[in-house]
Length: 564
Image (tube, rainbow, N blue to C red; front, side):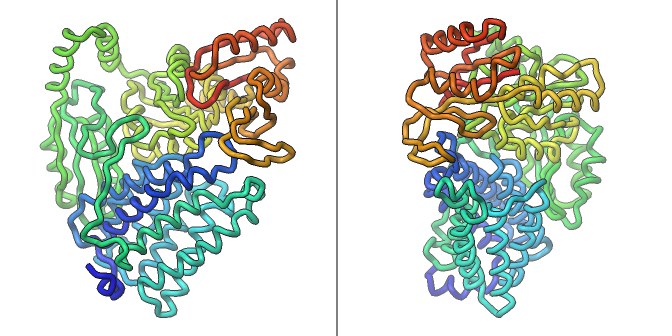
């Protein structure tokens, strides 16, 4: 389609919106590294651009499979994809923007410039409601200004292209002002990363309308998630068998009008295991393990038409697994993992996020049932966490995110996992997560456990030692690229060139001598002699304080420290 033709587009239908979503993902893919570099701290874990790209890619991937011309249906699919693929706080907010946009397109076959502007405003409203304490100077502010400009332009008779171009222009001006709204941005000399990512996506949308991205040539690009699994809905999900009483993994879409997600949840709650129901009044995605898939499909067809039906016989897969076990050199471990899946349902279970195998081993030794690998630079998605929850043979699951940028994605799991009661303990560091886990009483009641685990977060101080990825000025600290950095509760408190001295200074800022226990997780790049030097210093300075040292094997961070 030529630029001249695209400039005459007056309404968006489903297929155009799909192409715009795919172009937005491609646009951000090309520039995600630039967005990552806008991290306010010069530490090696800037991942806003990557998180937003993986989120929008998941949205584009899901809507790509919709052949309908209805913008309502395509937007609903994009909303579901972004919900399950959301990573990090920026990704979750982006998913909420797309969720609100889908609400704005609800029931529409196509949308004119005013309806598009109204959908953008609905996206902003939804995103603000999803954030407990909205902060101005972020992606929220930038998206709000784009929606405001879009509405004003559309109401003034602006075309679809003019509406989005004006929205992008005003959003860009707003982005430039974000350092004046957030002092931390001005100090770091950057604009808001999430706001920048959103504008890059919006530019991708506009490129389809201007013809810069030819509609017929726009294709999605397969990517792998940080965990190494292919981001493709055709993969079989939830491979491990939870309950052989329900041998058929059944997954499909229902399309109809006025679909009641809440009622479907209630109706299917006792029909099987591992139930997920997400979607909109027009499109609902259902995943469940059942005895008889036909009965589930018969029920669902009362609501509308069925699409993308996938049924997998897990008994057959189990037989293949058993055969593989006999031939495996690691058969003892595989058999143990499989047997764990057949244990009776207990009351409480725990899913923890960890950024190194050594740290994961500690969580498992303390009673965590599943560990999702992630943390700095590799935030797991809502879907990753949901899959882990479904593997746990427990009625109630506590999720320990152990990173402030994972908490929002963890909270979304409660909306998609329906046959488990999910509780998110807002741990923002590995030491906090361990403290919370130690406060879980398997024989206690739910409210007391939540209270004690949350209280446990305040019983420990957390610190890290890493390195700077760029020159920066942080408070009174002048930082050069390559300098070692000490952080306490995510705040840079010291810098230097000696790993031992920076670790010592960080611990002193944590007032370790006034506590009873120091826990040290050393990273994959930390030498054993360096760890021994730190241990020796701690013992000489205050031999009465107990010191525990573990090979965390985490990347990027030489030390993760906890004092309590």
